[in-house]
Each structure stands twice: as structure tokens, then as C-alpha cells.
Amino acid sequence: MRVLHRTGQWCPARQVGEVVAYDVRILPEYQVAGRPTVDRCYLLLDEAAQLTRPAVFEGALEGWWYVDLVEIERSGDDLIVHDLYVDLLFPPAVNRYQVLDLDELGDALRDGKDHARSVRGCSDRHPAVRAPVPARGGGRA
Image (cartoon, rainbow, N blue to C red; front, top):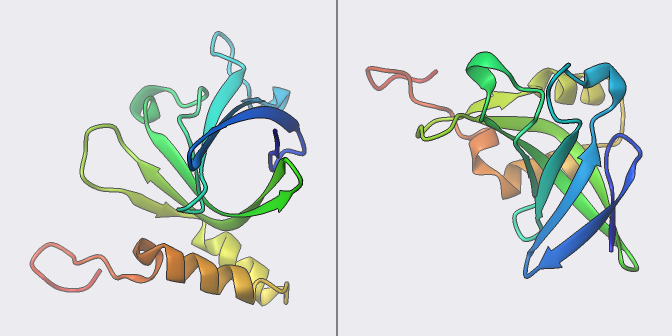
């Protein structure tokens, strides 16, 4: 089994149940001196999410999980991962998260790219993307 990562790399993978694990080489322009040059990624097939704890995260971000909301396409034994633009960032041992890259989603929609299916699938499958987060004091964020 192989996974096509968004960087264009075909990566050998192993599936156990509904989880696929694979290692992807960090592109040279993103590598950090003295840090690992490979990230371990996990695809949660039934959740349409890809989890990575980036090796390049340092300082305050070290140990955080980066979660891509994705669409997964099967082609024989291969999996092709399509990024749905919206990402989540989870700190270790904390009950909160950050939603990232909504601007990328907006740009894709503005530019007329046909992502209606992806946007609908993203918000249907991942309620955190569409649900307002209550601000302190009970109001809307």
C-alpha cells in the first residue's frame, strides 16, 4: 500500500483497521537543522482526517498535533489524499484546538475552483469547522 502525500511523494504505508500510517520526508525548504527529516502521518479513514506531529515544530509548538481535514481517494491499493484546506492544531494535554487556513478555503472559493463538494463534505463530517465557539461569558466568538 502507498499514500500520495500533498508534497507529491508516494510513501509506503501500512493499514491496521481504519488507520493508515506512513512516513513522509520533510522537504528540504521546511527542514530545521538538528531536527528529524521525516514526519509520521496517520490517516483516519473513517474520519477523513490526517494527523501529524510535525518534527519541525519547535518551542511553544513542539509536541502539537497538526490535523488536516482530507478527502481520501482509493486507487487500487494506493490512497490519494486531497487536502480540504481547513486544518486543526491541537496542543498536547489540553482540551482545546485552533482552526487554521480558512483563508485558503476562502481563496479557493473566490477563485472559482470547484470545491463545493469538498467544502460540504468538510463541514458535514467535521462539526468543529461550522460550529461557533462560545466566547468566555457565554457569547459567540
